[in-house]
Amino acid sequence: MKIKNIPVDLIDVADENVRKNFSFGKDSSDQLMKEHLAKFELLQPVVVRFDNFTKRYKLLIGRRRFLALHNKGEKEIPAVITKLKGAEAEAASLFENLIRKDLSPLEKARMVKKLVESTKSGITGVSRLYGLPKSTISEWLSILTLPNQIQEKIENCEITLYEGIKIARQPTEVQINLADIEPAALKEELIRLGIKRGAPKGLLTVRLVFNPSKEKDRILWNSLEEKAKEKGYEVNDFVKEIILNYLKKGK
Image: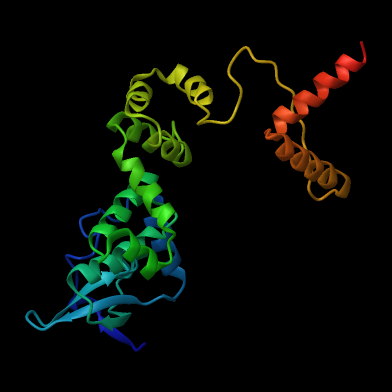
């Protein structure tokens, strides 16, 4: 991989860059990038393609790094020059953005969808090229099939990504009901459906905590889990049966 310093004023953001039309400088991650580059050198080069027609470079990967250095007044930027273009270039840009931590679940889901659409063999191709499990890709895509109201709840953090994926496995009528339900009743309904962990209102609960770092707790848990499986029970149901049998013997 050859890295070359390229004049900043010879670089344009490529059409294939998936964040080309996003604003820069307003969100906290942009500010952090600018503050970091104001103090330190750029460690990761951007990726560009040379355009023979315009005699300029097209930025494929590293838009925020490029804009931050541009704002800083730098004249040159370290860059890797590639021949990627079209769908391949867009796929590379998508994956670069997909691994960012500051994207919302829906932003990532939309990027996964575009990545699948721009990669040969779809889900299988993305899985093979980028090492993402096919099941994970399918789960990301599934939240885009949810009613818009539920997608908004995910965006607003009223529903987690994990819960959204589980909702996508529910029948359509259940999804529609959850989309229309009032926020105050949403949690209880998710618990009732087994989508959210917890106990519905009115139930009496007992909480047992096992610390796997303690040998006694670990042995006890493993024993409970093994016995529960033998009887076809979940551990909590098996423990409940043990308690009931103990109380019956005490009578």
